[in-house]
Amino acid sequence: PVSPIAWQMLILPLGFLLGLRSNQAYERWSNGVESYSQCISAASELCRQASSYVKMDVEGGSGEGPNWQYRNAPSGVWPESGQNDYEDPDKERLFRHSLAFLAMVRQDIRKRRIVDNEDREAVIRRATEDRLHVTEQELQHLVDTGVYSPEVNGPLVIARWLSHDVAALAHRISLP
Image 1: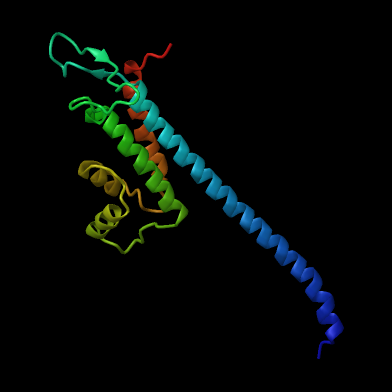
Image 2: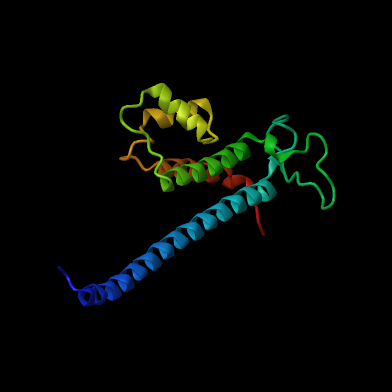
């Protein structure tokens, strides 16, 4: 039998090591929460700036070319009917892909990958339940490319879409 003194001598360093391990695990969790919070802030700031600084075609494509102007309501005034900037399909796509990127990162953090035995309908149903904010065509593309498999980096796929969305709007931004 092991003497009580040996157990006491073993418990002290073991407890110290377990305490350090718990602190490291909490620190990693805290860093992850902070990083995801920064990601959410960056996405909301991107959407806010796109809503404020991207010009819109105020004539709706009539005439010889687009008439790019800001359609922001003055401070303290609600936008009038027809003055909503979300009616622009390019801005709407940027907003949707920002939300889809955050949803995909959240899925990766929670390890919500789809197992190999699920069929295509189950993958589409699960992706719809996860609220990816993508169109039906985009969802079909994600499923076809295997974005839910462990081999594919899902957030990176949507980040590429987001980069394209920003580049598509670059010609409509003119900051001093």
